[in-house]
Length: 191
Image (cartoon, rainbow, N blue to C red; front, side, top):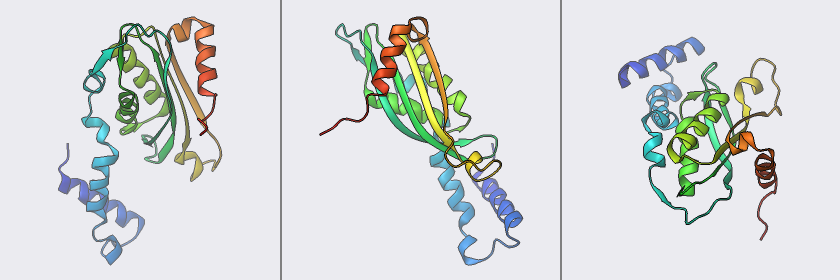
């Protein structure tokens, strides 16, 4: 692993590749700012799924779908280092224990705040739910717009990629999957 100083020097080299000199006023502190922003953007590497999902509560016999939808996230494409952002819908059917809803958003962040591809985030969140909550079913659906498609290559501004991972009853039983999709599509709450 590189030191912070080595990482800042690497950013300086990239800046000089883009613009001949990194000495002008606006760029002088850019290497340090970039590396400091990386500490936040890639914080998922310092997070642990077991720790995030370990605090559970008695489900008191609840056996329906638990869904947290429209979890916004930002990530970075590992292929082009371009941002992608979207929303995740995370669901599970508990057996005996439930987890606080903020933990569902946090597990999405754990995976999104790494160099990623959308498929890996989707699979990783589903794997973590399955491994740490032991639910009857787990489901993750992610919709995202990718900077690597918007600002380079094919330059398609409105393309949305959708990925899904269905486990347990969401994979095996069509009715469970249909109910989940209806809940996701039910729209925002009205006041």
